[in-house]
Image (cartoon, rainbow, N blue to C red; front, top):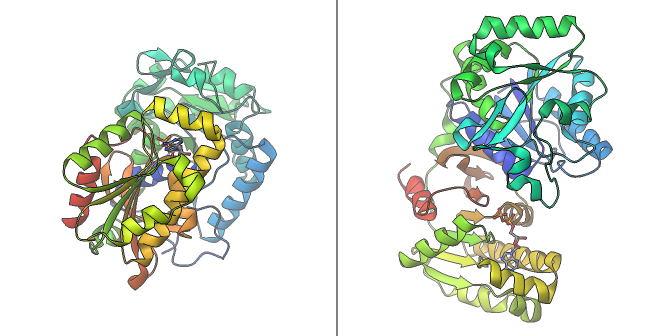
Length: 423
Ligand code: ADP
C-alpha cells in the first residue's frame, strides 16, 4: 500500500501510543523502530517512525527527524504528523520547536498547529496553558522529571523560546465556536505572519473540531489523542481505506512470556496479580546478575512448561531499587537488568516462545533491540495506548506487547493473553 500519513514520534513508547490510537480507526498501521535502513517496501497506509530525539541535542534531533521525513516521503506520504508527549516534554533548547521548524521548511508549509492535549488522560490546554489533571504542568510531577523538567505551563512561552518565528494561540473560545471559526482564526494568524499556532483543547469534542478544521494541512504536530480523530476524518473522506484491517487478526501461537523491568507503581501491582493467579515466576536479583550472570534464570526458563503462564521480572519496590542502585550505581543497575531481560528474551525465542509481553519503556527499547525487531504491525488494543503488535515474516513471526510504566489495569497481563487467545 502507498503510505498516506507519515508520522514521526520523538520517543519509543510515545510512538506505540500514537500507533495504537491511529489503529483505532481500523486502518493498518506500521511502526518502524528508528529510520529503516532500506528503501520503503510493504508499507502500510499509516507509517509511524519511532525516534529517540526528545532529550538529545537539537541539531541531532533535526538530522534524525529529517532523515525519517525523507523515508516517509519515499513511501509516498501525503500528510505528516510530528508526535511528542502530552506533557510537551522538552529541554530548554527544544526539541519540539526546532524539529517542527525544520520539518516545516523541508515540507514547505507556512503554518502548523501544536496540540499536545489528551483529555482522556487529564492533559488539557486552556488559554495556552497546559494542565495535568487539575494542576498546571509546572506544578505537576513533571516539574521534577530527571531529563525534561517542565517549569513553565505556558505553551506559547515554551515554544517561542524554541522557534525563530512567531507563536500564536487559537483559544478555547475559538475552538468551541466550531470548525469554521477555527479555520478563520488560522487564516487570520497566517495573514499576520504567525506560522506556529498553539490550539486549546479541554475535551475530546475539541479534538474533533481541530482535526476537522486541520485535516487538509500537510503537516500537523501534537499528542497521540489528536491523531485519533484525524485518522477518522482521513477515512471518512476516502483518503485512507476502511476495509483492510488484516493487521488486527493475527492468531495466537503457543508459548507466552512476561518480561518485566518496570518498577512503576502499576507494574508492581500487575506483577503481583499475575503471580497470584498461578504464573510460574522468577525474580531477577540485579546484584546476583551482576556477579553471576544469567545462567540461573536461563536454566529455570528452559525447564518450564510453555503452555502455562510464565513471568520473569526485576520489578521491585522503590526501597529495594534504591538499595540496588546504591550498590551498583543507577545507570549500571538499569543496564544489568535490561541486559539480563534481553538475554531471557533471546533464549525464550530460541525455545519457541512466540508471544512476549514486556513491561517498561526502557526495557522495551532494550529487548526489541536485542531481538532485532525493526518493524511492528499494530494489532488489537489491550489497554489505552497499549496494543498487541506483530513482527517478522510468517513462520518467524512473534507477537509483542510493549507496556510502559503506569499503563494498563491491575490485570493487564491476563487481559493481554486473553485478547490474543480470542482473536
Ligand atoms: P518504566 O516504563 O516503568 O519507567 P523502564 O523500563 O523505562 O520502566 O525503566 C525501569 C528501569 O529500572 C530500567 O532501566 C530497568 O532496567 C531498571 N530496573 C528494573 N528493576 C530494577 C531493580 N530491581 N533495581 C534497579 N533497577 C531496576
